[in-house]
Image (cartoon, rainbow, N blue to C red):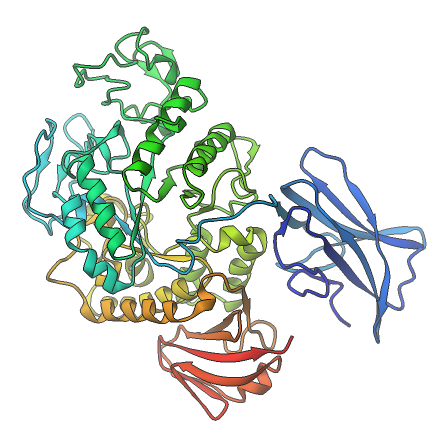
Length: 628
């Protein structure tokens, strides 16, 4: 007996995944011929806060063991919809709900999700098929040029490979005031290296003047931090990067500022500005929320050096989003868009205004949000978010993929990996999927090589993490596992994002040890070559830009538990086989196991005599024609 309902199968749901507004989707269920409904089954659809809709399903075809009941739905509203099916026999109402990731069955279960996105929702082409490289500016490359007007209170370090400071002072404060001197000119000097690595987009952690080395406590939105160089230096970086086919996106931190900023000015650093902390007459006073003026105020996660902003204050919104505002200023300087810090703490109205501002400047400018969960159905502070429906973000940082990749590479069930990936591919609009920021490491989490081969660190102290390195054996194993993780990151839908130094074998547990300086002169060249080859292969396959992905399954979920195999669809299709194990794996009789394909051809790796051979921790790619 066939499944009653299956969202992965186009004969049950005629459009896979999210649906564009006003496009008609056909929903079908299959009921055994033994079942005689008292009246036609119904599709029950609803949106949060709205009444249910009941769509009658009629018999559209007869198969050997079942009748197929179908109905068409043309959504008018961009929103997240939920649905299930119902029918009645002998006066008893029965329900067909989600019983696993994609299949529906009778009884208690979850609701299916249908994301409907705006009919005119498109995302920038320049990222599609490309490769991103994330740089923590203070730690990537130091040009050696002398910069002027360095603010007081900074410690300039000369030990490039030293451990970042992390211990509190006698008052219990960690000021993050040690700087290694990475700058714009340093990045510019490495553009050829990045180009050879295959990079097409640089994502820079914050560059605005700030008085801690991470620069998430903005002090002046209109000024590059003097340690990095001048605003003109940034513009020159963008101009030179463009010659290599590389764009540059910036980190936008708009939910809070620094207490030590010209807007709040708690410590009086800015003599030419009256900050909100200094006077209620300050032009910035209404930006902030004071509880007991001036010493008690709302702060980001209670950290008093990061006073919260009321983003929907008209003056602040104009300052950021206006024609003469922050966004347009840096776009004028050459930025290709923004990654938005803590996007779930930015209210809908502000995000709507931000998108209008950026897209009015240029539809090819990108907006990527920091969201750690499934962004299609995320709730924050009691509000259902609308990130990916067409009027806010282009896409998000893809933490769900990262967790799925790490868990699979560490030995988790292939089925769980497939479910995690397919859930995102089902829930997100296709335009968002094509520019998803995929990664295995960032500045906020331990580096992937440590997570894969190192010790569990969540229960460890900073002292433990500070000088904790992988043993030689752990490093060898970690490098093998990192290769598998990188391979998955490069070939799954979205844009692979390399966290600076991952490709060189840089280690580090959690902040700030994941922010060590790039190991120039001590790189793992074999690992760099491997990543460069991934880039070359990725760029050689046209389907990487927007080809849909389906997992190739056998005996339930995978050809071999050590291997995952998936397609990037096009003409022809490309089938990727990735071996996570230390064993050589042979997959023979491929044409029988993948009977819906024909005309298999080797593209990359070993394919001979209807057999794919996968060395340990390696991959192979096979061309094939999909027969439907």
